Amino acid sequence: MAKRIIVACIFTPAILWIMLVPSPLAWTALVCFISATAAFELLRAVGEDKITLPMKAATMVSAALLPFGSWAELGMAYVNLLSFVVTAVCFWCAIRAYDEEGGPSVGFFHVLACLFAGIIIPLGLSALVELRRMDHGKYLVLLAVLLTFVTDAGAYFAGVFLGKHRGVTKVSPNKSVEGYIGGFVTGVLFAVLYGVVSSKIAGDGVNLLSLALCGLFGALATEVGDLAFSFIKRQYGVKDYGHLLPGHGGMLDRFDSMIFCGPVVLFIVRFLPVF
Image (cartoon, rainbow, N blue to C red; front, side):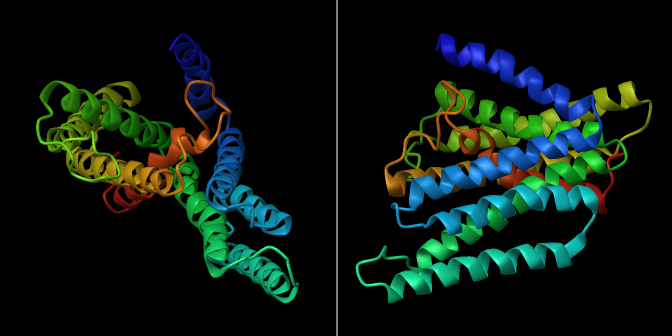
């Protein structure tokens, strides 16, 4: 527990400083690192030692470059190119493995795992780069990041003190209906309160409806993201995706919910601006 607290006390302020103080490029570089590391952790968890080195390399490079493309505004052509490269490399490796007698049995599933790790995960995290680049980007990206943590905390404490109806899903059998509701309520209340405080600091009015929607659907996305990556852990008997952060697991353990929450918040604030 002491190790977990010490790492949190060091890691959290460092993340917040990079997110809010330097230029958006510094935050983009960090998101690229988080994305590539998360991709590697996922492949290690599900690859069964059959995902070849070129497949891993193409996946991690794509995971690192996609958030950069969001910062550089390279558009969908850039996303399509990286998607094609990862797909082509992975299928070529699978074909070669199929042709070689006694070689690793690279299946269609392994190709899909690389596409998920190299395209879907970084696309989700790229929303955090997009939020930082927008007007009042510091407030928007901080909203998305804090919303995931607050939702998780609200769900946890509601489940501990009020949880009676457990076993909603076998993926997380200890979680309760009351915990999920607590997470939703906490997310909405936090988002609205965050908007009120931000308006005072920024000196601009805020759209409370937009913030409430961010809280509601962002909290829902956070819960889905947590369950999705817990499902993968259960299926492959993995406790933590990595050990990069002592007491906290790997990057994917810390940022899994943001892969789902970030795009939801980005979509809402683009069509219903907060400021």
